[in-house]
Image (cartoon, rainbow, N blue to C red; front, side, top):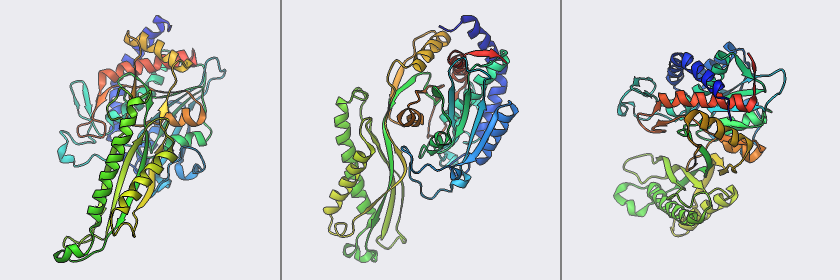
Length: 427
């Protein structure tokens, strides 16, 4: 069990840095780090790492060969020369404990219509115990916990007694290629901790996710004779309904799944973006729909992709035009396996002990219908990966917000975990 005196020492250090941590998080949230525009945010974080004396590795995804690796997701319409990744290394002269990767993502999803937010999405207004902002919850507060857990050790006069790699990545919301790039670049440790907003519970498992684009053709005619042409948008609607039916069948099988049996409909299907047509008075000759579908842990990506392909092909065969002009399915983005952390790893046991010491209650676990970067570490490189972070609300929604008291307590828990896992030495 962690030393109660050490917990008290770290608690005082977190409190001493707290006002600075809140202001730091506000600065981080102000960066509108949507996909392709994360560079300024990452450059600021690189400077923050350097100011702490950490060795900094700043690179772009265009510099890393990954497409041959398991876990790589195909990419369209994205310039990886703009996709900046940053790793800060804190080395210990002697390895007296175990090494650690602490990783967080800075990419955020688009905020949507700003007038539908109570406060502007990139204005981190604090109201009571909450901080507003796109990404404040998912997961810039976790990034703040990473940095200030390390700061708490230093304030307490301590440093990790094993190597620690603090990583800020992009592409978590769409491919996972940012996390994969750190592994392709050679960073390894005895465990990885990702402080996604889990309300101080441990992610035991999550579904897999695939993104794909449906591309459908049609025959354009004047709307006055619409029955002599075909409407690509309405053809897409038929295909989407068949994919919803496929999802229902998968969820029926999930009732016997060891991880998801107790969860209602763990696999989700979502048509997220639609484009199509050229003129309001012509039947549309084309339609594209960008989709996301989950898959149960234990189902391979090859099996899941074939299910989608078979469903689309069967639906097309029932349409006289599509039967001869089959829709395309283009894999673009997430090709993410499911994740299952087996109980009883040394990393989990250490986290459970520090959680108990900080929160005064046993560590709970949950399963998720989303994905996280933990899969890259455990599934492909056998690095025990813990997804555990603070509480918030509104991931991907309007009025997203971080819960500041939870962030403060979770920063302490992460600092205590670093101390227990890595050991400590005088700073």
